Amino acid sequence: MFTGIISDVGTVRRIRPGPDTRPGPDTRMEIATTFDPGEIAIGASIACSGVCLTVVEAGGADGTGWFAFEVSPETLRCTTLGEWVAGRRVNLERALRVGDELGGHMVSGHVDGIAEVSRREAAAGDGGSIRLTIRAPRDLSRLIAPKGSVALDGVSLTVNDCAGTDFTVNVIPHTLGHTTLGEAAAGSRLNLEVDVIARYVARLAAN
View 1 (cartoon, rainbow, N blue to C red):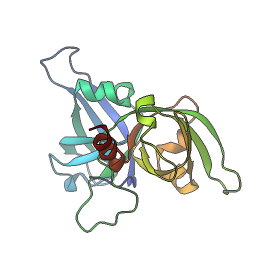
View 2 (cartoon, helix red, strand yellow; view 1 turned 180 degrees about the vertical axis):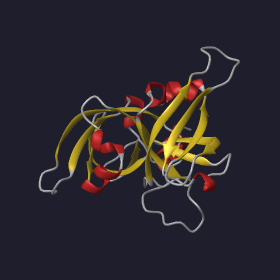
View 3 (cartoon, rainbow, N blue to C red; view 1 turned 90 degrees about the vertical axis):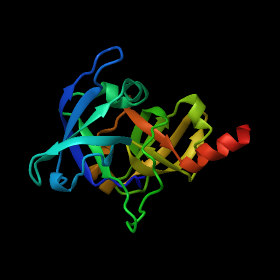
View 4 (spheres, rainbow, N blue to C red; view 1 turned 120 degrees about the vertical axis):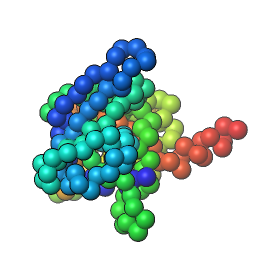
């Protein structure tokens, strides 16, 4: 589990594509990070722009470290990872430990779909914050509610309001400067995870 509080912004350093068809090795990606590689266990989970991935190798030194993971075709299809290239900046969060502060909301790292930024504007009266209008996939929009929580590229955010498939969020200057949301613009595609509680409520209501 994660909290949606980003602790590092890494960079994709290398991608080794997998085969187009199974069986065969999955796509391998390496991410440069300031995390101490000596503290990253093989098999550990790290959320990479909201996607929970398993570390298969780590190396480098503290401050210039890196880790690698393998990505299945399903993950490439259902998230923005299929669009990643070397040099792309990535939001990183280590898995939650017992006793850690829960600063955001409960995030599983299981992306529900890809949302798109339709508008970016200054948030009126909010001193440097911006307001993003996000278009969610239609089947997910019903799971997003005003004042509820969402994770966009792994960042925990509070929904302002909703209209149809669109919803808005405010992003404060600190978040703009310490995550990749500072680069978000109209047309940007973001990994979207709805509130885990909304998922289960919807499932119960459907039965």
